[in-house]
Image 1 (spheres, rainbow, N blue to C red):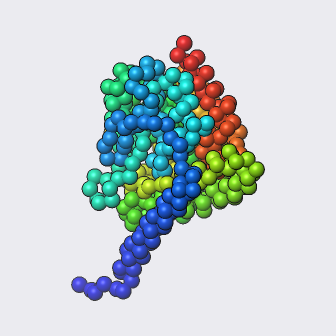
Image 2: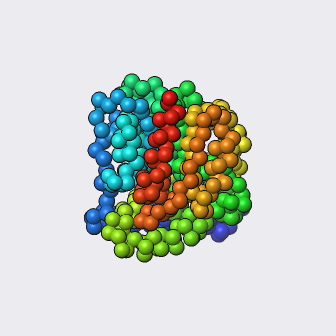
Image 3: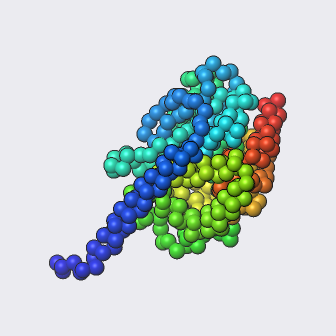
Length: 368
């Protein structure tokens, strides 16, 4: 047998060193986030109890258990912490649901242990198994056999998957700037994906893909949204203490990320971003192939026509192709003080003044 050439081990060693460096950067970002929190920019969350817990998930229940309204399950993106939905009382989506009489629950995604044992979760875990466990716990707690499910960004992908798989369990689906159709000419991530043969080697190098790596790729793909718009938003917020505080709270949240399981990262990149399988009706989850034709619950979708991160073309075609008999498409026009416009629908003043009341009024009409 020939002796290994000197470069035979170079790539794995380089990948391992890169993974270690990025994980150290992750820890540094988390430390900066904690510093912002000590400066007074931490979240002011609504009191909650953890109703159910298992690896990867805490199911939060807000308020008391004696409410009698309909149930809603809020689904964040599985990258950063869930409190962006509940940043402070005046801009808390959680509070808005409670004010409308809903029993409010939230899937709080939690980091998986990086020990190589049962930590490689994928779309089937986040979009089906863990949400199904959440619904069982909600039913036991509230007595409600159906619920409304609302997801933001990648959380909207998970909410849509669950709605497609369990139409009898979902009263209504709300998708907030969720990427569900990946049109190459409008997807800002296309150049990065085209330059990568396959996502699996990246996932294998990290095992769990650090949040800082995802941040770097996002900033490279769309520097205007992830860098320049944030700088301009801070400048525009300087004259208003309340807007500046919200901006800084979102800044703290951007540093509060955790790694993405390697399989989930690979499936998002390959099955969705590269191959657009969900829109094509070819997304395989637990032995089933699903697409927009399987989403039959009343549907509300919110898009930002100005967004390059999640352009309207990333959601509208899925919305139009859904089998839902009753649909509503809302346009979010943006806010000052939100730091990242992509989260403005959750924390923006105009979103709380106009978008959320429109959603609630539409849902009330759907129930009558």
